[in-house]
Each structure stands twice: as C-alpha cells, then as structure tokens.
Image 1 (cartoon, chains in turn red, green, cyan, purple):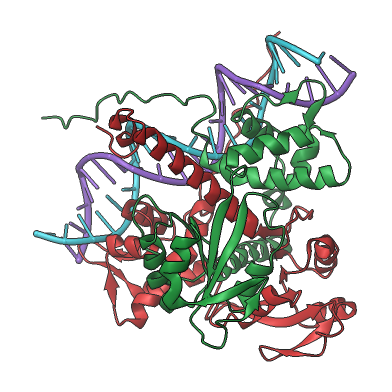
Image 2 (cartoon, helix red, strand yellow):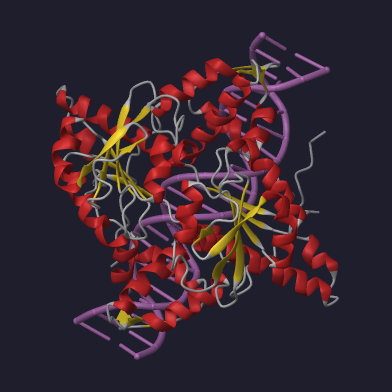
Length: 245
Length: 245
DNA sequence: AAATGTGAATTAATTCACAGCC
DNA sequence: GGCTGTGAATTAATTCACATTT
C-alpha cells in the first residue's frame, strides 16, 4: 500500500498588501534608512538603482521588495523619497509607538539606551532595569534605572511590548520568562543563549561571536583561494566564481 | 526573432566539504554555542533533536546542515559533542587565529572589547582605536587605545584581518576605506550606514534599529490578528497559521 | 528615453519521509 | 528501537527580461 501524500492543501494565495515575505521585511529597514538619508541630503526623488546602491542590494531585488507594498513608484521617474518613507514606515508599524524596555544596563545596555534617533519614530525606550544595586537609581539617557524586583510593575505600568535582553547569559532566560509573563511578545536578545519562548513571541538574536565566526569562515575561504591561485592552479578556477560565461 | 536564452550553463556540482550553503554557515555558530554549553554541563552525546531544541531550529534542518560537513554522527545514538565542536570549529576556520581590530571605543566598543570568551578560540581582539583624545591612551580590556592617526601602522603591524566598525555613522565609511586599504577583508559594521567595499571584502552589518523595526512589524501583525479575532471573525483564520490540516 | 512592476525562470532553502545503520 | 543521513518534494527567494507607463 502506498503511503498517502498530504492532500493538495489549498493555500490561500497572498492577499495584496498582507503577507510580505520575511526576507523583504528584513530589508525594509535598510531602505528606510537609505531614504531618510537621501531626504536629509535634499534628494526628493530616486530611482531603484540609486536606492539599491545606497542600500547594498540589487535594483531588481529592491523593486520586487517594494512591489509587495504596492505601486508607489513612477515609471520613467523613480520613487518620491518622502512618500516612500511614509509607506515603508506604515508597513513596518512605525506609525504607532512601540514601547521598549532594556534589561541589563552594562556597557551594551548603555550603548543601546543612548542610541538616539535609533528609530526616529515608532520606537521609544521607556524603561531601564538592572540587577546591580550600584547601577539602580542612576540616570541613563534620561531614564532612572529600576531594580529587577520592579520588573513586573514597570513593564506592565508602562505598557511595554518589546523587551531588550542585554544581561549576562546566565540570567537571560529568567528575564525573558518574566518579560513574557508581563505580556511582552517581541524580544531582542543580545545574550549568547537560545531563549525558549511560547509560539506567539518573536525573538531576534544579535550575537557578536556569531557574526565574527561567520566572517572568519569567509576569511578562511578567501585565504584558501589565494593559496590555490598562488600555487599556479589555473586562474580559470578562481575566475569562475565571478563570471558566468 | 527569438531572444536566445542563456546557454544550459554547466554548473559544477557541489564538491564534498566545500561550498557549504550560506544559510548553513550562519547557523553553525549557534550549534557551536549549544554544543560547548552541553560539554560544559558534562553532556557527552546528544541527538539531533536535543541539539535542535538547544539551538532553536528543527532537527531535520540541523541534520541537513551537519550533513554538509560530513558524517559525524552515529545512527541510533546521536552526535559526540566534543568531536562535533572540533569539526564545526575547523569548518568555520576557528582552528587558526583571526586578529580583530575594534575602531570606536564608546559604550559599544567597550562592550565589544570586554566581551571575553566571545569566541573562546579562533578570534582575538588585538587592537583598539578611537578618535577621541580623551580616550586615546586609556587601557580597555588590557589593550591601549590608539589614535586614529596610527590606524595604518597598528593594523598592518598586528596583521589584522577583521575590523569592527563601532564609530558614529559619519566616520564609518572613512574608517572602512582605511581598514580595507590595510588589507582587512572582513568587516563587522555597527554603524547605521551601508558601507561600500570592493567585491573581495565581506561586510556584515548589525543594526539595532533594523532589529527593533522588524520586531515592530511582527508586533503590528500580531496586534492586527488579535483585533480580527476579537471582532468575531472565524477563529479558523487564526488557527490556520498554526496547524496544517 | 527612462524606469517601474511583474510574470516566468532559476536558484536556494526547507521540509518530508524513509532507507540504512547501530 | 532509535536516530542519522539524504534523496525527493516542496516552498521561498532571487534573478531575468520585458511589456507598460510616464
């Protein structure tokens, strides 16, 4: 007897405007950054090619990405920067204000708290928390640092929906659990651990060591290629990674 | 006349061991972290399922990823943690030592410099540089902070191959150009700008605002879903994002 | 003439599901 | 019996290339 395959599964095809691909969402902030930079420099209109260079992607990719939001460009002309800033902001949810709490006010927490204009609009740091009694009560970036014991009170009262975990690895999961317990559903984790969370909570992890290790891999690959070419192996082997013909 | 399509393109199929997919490379550091954690806790062997939970991925994905490195597991048993640590380290190039320079010793630079055990092996911070005369000469994490004017000398003498840009946005491109001029081919960029570099230089960007904006997007999506379900629309719409039947 | 928006084609990544081995 | 390793199937992302619009 043949094992039955899963049935054809009627997939609702992507509704226009909704269901933007993850890869696109991850790039929208880069476009936003490029656009605000252009606006500040007095540029009012830009082609997909210009925007692409400014954002470090290809123009085809940029156009495809933007097409998921709607038709906000003008053929033969390009995109109106300010208008596009608004559309991307709206799509990312930056027309509302998301309240952020930072837990862990060491060097990294300080850097994060002081990161002004880190989102010009849409995100406000409204609470700082730390376990160190010497730090509690201090004023950082205009906010008083609260004790960990007050986490629930502060996070709930200030209606925080995004938490930043900048604590040592050892306390990260505990802090995460407490944040989630207060209704926080988005977490940015700088601690080098994998946080376990319920399915409705999004976690993004930023990890220094990970990034450096990825760079190390590419360094190794490049070093190996240099070695090969230096030993007189046909250059064509190397060149083939660059040209397609 | 019909436009000729590009010819069939004879693609060299992936050589064993070489050409690991980017997505896999990006996850190897997470596996490495999970494994060293297990080793420290005295665990000598782990199944793909255990490792997957610890790393926040599915077991199928983990097995597929590891299969690109070779067959380092034992059927019916799992993976020998220490052995796998070694194999992944080797693949990432962490058996050699990559020398790192950090440019910009503000709060973030401090945090990065003090990030001990940030790679236990394979990566060493060997130079710190800053533009602020008050910071130059200070001792941070056991290293003297050098003036920006000495960048070329220090980076060349200490044979740095990876540079970390932790400066304000305004000076990031200039710093980047100077690093690249000294032969640095891997850059980790914390400044909120897109660095323009030659094709043989790898840049990885870590951006707070980007991460928070991505979280904001998902918060918005979840809030919208809650709204919809509260208004009495069929729960099935919501449930369909969780179950496949 | 210039540049968007987008189907179609291609390539990459993920998931399934099970043969093969311990 | 349990778990890896992996082809095959599926889904996602990227790239191509051009019709369409200003």
